[in-house]
Length: 102
Image (tube, rainbow, N blue to C red; front, side):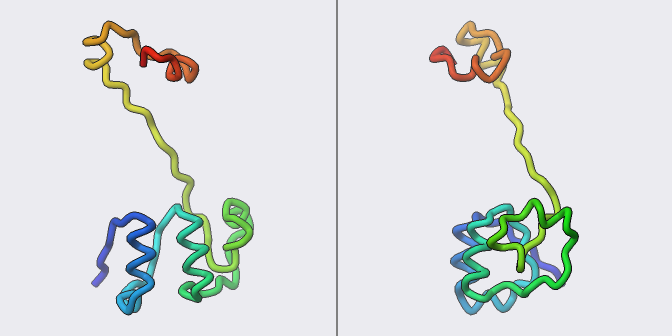
């Protein structure tokens, strides 16, 4: 059986520093700080051969135990109703986002 967890890096760090870490087989995280912590505490296995292109995306200090499998991103949500209530047009660019009116 595979059990998945969705936790913050801090919460995962606490879990993995306990005896319950024995029940964890795979960690998917975008936190190099968590991976650095786990590596420093010998909680990660060494990777013998990871694709070089993937390793270029990983901080040098954790390359021996970590591999990049995806690049994440983010999006912005514009609440048009809130803007309309304040009689504001949607921001047109990043500079607009810094204006006091927003």
